[in-house]
Amino acid sequence: MPRLRKSVFLLLLLLPLPVFFLSLTIGSYQIPFDELLAILFQGIAPFLNSDSSQTQIYRDVIFMIRLPRILLALFGGIALSVSGASLQSVFKNPLVDSYILGLSAGAGLGAALAIAFLPNIIGLTQLFAFLFSFMAFMLTYFVARDRGQASTVSLVLAGVIVTALFSAALSMIKFFTVPEKLSSVVYWLMGSMAVSGWKEVLYSVPLILLSFLIITLMRWRLNVLSMGDEEAKSLGINVERDRLVVLLTTTLMVSSFVSVAGIIGWVGLVIPHLVRMLVRTPDNRIVIPISASLGGVFLLLADDVARSLTSYELPVGVITTIIGAPFFLYLLKKRGGGSWRQ
Amino acid sequence: METIVSVKDLSFSYGGSFKLSSITLNVEAGTVLALLGPNGCGKTTLLKCINALLKPEKGKVLIDGKNAHELKRWEIARLVGYVPQAHVPPFPYSTLDLVLMGRTAHLEFFQQPSNLDQQIAEQALRMVGLSHLGHRPYDQLSGGERQLALIARAIAQEPKLLLLDEPTAHLDFKNQFLVLDMVRRISRENGIGVIMSLHDPNQAIMFSDAVALMKNGSIFAVGPPHSVVTREKIETIYEISVRIVKHTDGSFIIPSMESFS
Ligand SMILES: Nc1ncnc2c1ncn2[C@@H]1O[C@H](COP(=O)(O)OP(=O)(O)O)[C@@H](O)[C@H]1O
Ligand SMILES: [Mg+2]
Image (cartoon, rainbow over all chains, first blue to last red):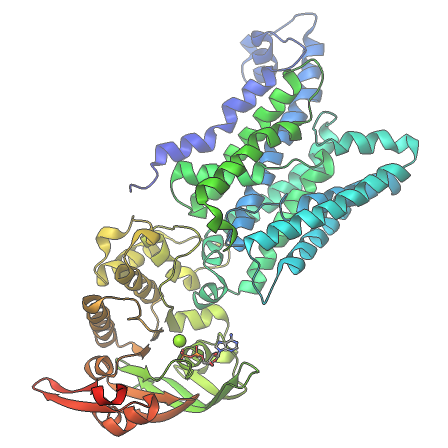
C-alpha cells in the first residue's frame, strides 16, 4: 500500500480555506460577490474599491455577524474531532469520543451552572466547564474500569449513565434559573452558534488553539500510547503522565467550545473514522492534522446548512446527529459485534 | 567479557501465593540466555521485573551497571528492548510505523521521528528480512513475520539487552528456527545480551550460550546448556521422564513414551 501522497495531504489540509470563503457568502442577507471581495481585500487590492451606499451594512454583516460565527464553527470542529482522535488513541478504542465518554455533558453542566448562578466574570464559565467536564470523565472512567481495564461496552454504558445524570442536573438548573437569565441558558443549551459574536470567539478559540498545538506536538506519542500500557512503557513512555496530559488537554479543548456553543455530538466519532478510511492509515501524524481540517470543514458546513436551510435557525447539533448516528450504526454493524468486547 | 545485566537476589510477589524468590542471574554482551521451565513458573514475571515493569520486593537489577528501578522509562528503553508475545494492536499501523515506535525513547517529549529515525527503522526491518513488508499493515502479517517485526522494533531501540517472551510460541516448525537463528545472529553481531523464555529444551541447546532452569519461581540450575539441560534436571522441573538421544550435531532430549502410558 503506497503512502499518502504529499499533494493529497496538502489538499485535505487546505480544504478549510475555500469552505471558509464559501461560508462568508452564505446567509439570509444577500451580499453581491464583488462587494464581498471588495470588502475583504480592499486593503491589499485598492482597485476593488466599493462605494455602494450599503457598504457599511455589508461590512457589519460580514465582520460582526458572519466572521465570528464561522471562526467558532471552524475551531469547534477542530476541537471536537481532534479530541475524538486523541481519546480513541489513549483508550485504544476507535468507538469513543468526548460525547460518548460524558465529557460534553459535564462541560455543559459546568457552563450552565456558571451562566445561571454566577456573576458574569471573564473565564469563569470556561473554568466551570473544564472542571465539570473532567469530573464527568473521571466518573465514567471509574465506573467502567475493572481491574485496570475499561472495555468498550462498559465505557459506552458508563458514559450513557453519566451523561443522563449530568443532563438531569442540567434540567434542574433550567427550573431554578431566574427568568432574566433563563433565555441565555436555554439558547446556549440548544447547541448552536446562532448567538455567537467576537466575545465567544475570544473566550474559546485561544484555548482551543493552545490545546490543539499540544496535541499536534504529541501526535507521535499518541501512536505509541495506543499500543497499550505495558508496551508503551517498554518503548520508553511514562504512560500515566502522558495519558493525563492528553486527557487534560482534550478536556480543555472540548469544554472551551461547549462553554460557548453548547453540546454538539458525533463530530469526534465520525471525522477521525472517516479520516482513517480516507488516508488508509491510523498514524496520528497524519490523522490528527487531517481530522482537524475535515472536522473544521464538517462543522462549518453543518452550521451553514443550519443557518440557511430554513427561514429560522436549526440547532447545528441536530444536523451533526442526523449524519453521525447512522454512521456510528454502520460502523458497529461493519465491525461486527466483536468490537464491543475488546 | 562485559556484563550487561545482573539480577541480584531478586524477590517479587503479585500479592497471591506465587513468589519469585532470590533470583540471581548474569548475562554477558553478545550472549544468549534461555529461560526454561513449566507454565506458571515465573518466566514472564522475571522478564517484566528485569524490564522494570514490575517492582521487586527485594534485590535489584543492574543493567549496564545502573539500577533499573531507579531509571526513567526512556532511560530503560534505551538499554532494554522488550519483545512481547505477538499480538494484534487495536489500530492497524503499517509495519514500518510499528518498528519506528522503537525510536520513541530517543525523542524529546514534543518531537516527531526524524528522517534519521526513519532510516534506523528501515535498517532494522532489513536486518530481520522484512524490508518488502514495511508498508503492509502489521495486522496483515503472518505470525512469524509479526514476531520478526517486533524484534526489529526492539532493535530500533538500539538496546544493550534484548528480552523476548516466548518468541517461538504460535510459530510453525520452520519459523521457530528462523526467529531463533535471527536472535542469535543479532546478539553476536551487535554485542547485545539476550534473555528469552523458551518451551523446548532442544531449542535452548541449539541457540543459547547459557540456560537457566526455573521451577516455582526460583532458579533451579543455571549454566552452559550441556551441563544444565541434562536428563535428571529436565525430569525434575517438568516431572516427566525423558531420554537423551545422541546425534552428530549434539545430544537432544525427547520424552520417553512409557511415561504417558
Ligand atoms: N498480573 C498477575 N497478577 C497475579 N498473579 C499473576 C499475574 N501474572 C501472573 N501471575 C501468576 O504468577 C505466576 C507466574 O506467571 P508467569 O510469570 O506468567 O509464568 P510463565 O511465564 O513462566 O508461564 C502464575 O502462577 C500466574 O498465575
Ligand atoms: Mg509466560
